[in-house]
Length: 197
Image (cartoon, rainbow, N blue to C red):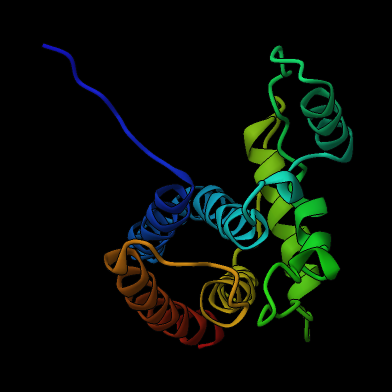
């Protein structure tokens, strides 16, 4: 009997957000869960940026070189297309702030406020430090991480519900995203009080 794990870009974004909530609920008892919050938040934010940028041809989410190669291969009828390469996390972040978000007549570009850009950069840096962990002892100050989560959550919320670029084909995912954002905000509020107190 065969068993399959099936996923797509919407499921990747939403279920990673669910993992943020699950791990965040455990950081008060064990700070090591922050690692998994960081990895899941990075995955979720990247997933929502991809959902907001994909459009109908999905070229916006590729590196410039990969998109050019795909267009050229399509133009000349080459059926040996190279495997597309997703753009980097920080480039996707730049793209959601650009005209590349104007996919539909009602689309909106993301404009960062406050510490959001700093938080996105910090999230990316911490995620890379964990993924490419070098032999070392490392002490990570976690009291600033609730702000990073809040900032990135606000970006996810904008992309999911205000950019008008994400078309929810499964209403359950839309409802789940709204509920997860609410629950994560509550967890972050409690953590912020605990860290400040």
